[in-house]
Image 1 (spheres, helix red, strand yellow):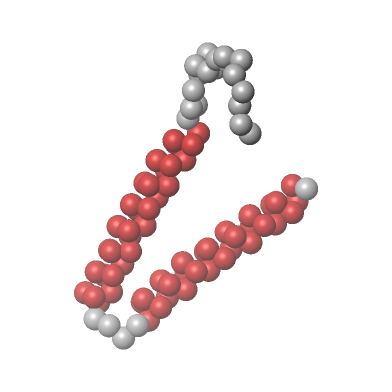
Image 2: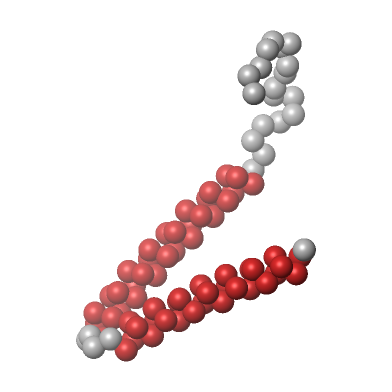
Length: 81
């Protein structure tokens, strides 16, 4: 089973890498002055950095323990499932 997971992860990484390389090539080969290309790259970098920070915060929140084991006590009442 881990082999199929490894293959899927490799395919996703290859796809993302190809997309990034393609986007960079399109920006660098576009008929625009260098200043405009640098501004676009700067904006893309800032947006990507903010997205990475946001995803890191979400991952940290999801990985942190939500509650200690003693926080919830069963009072014997009915519960809806």
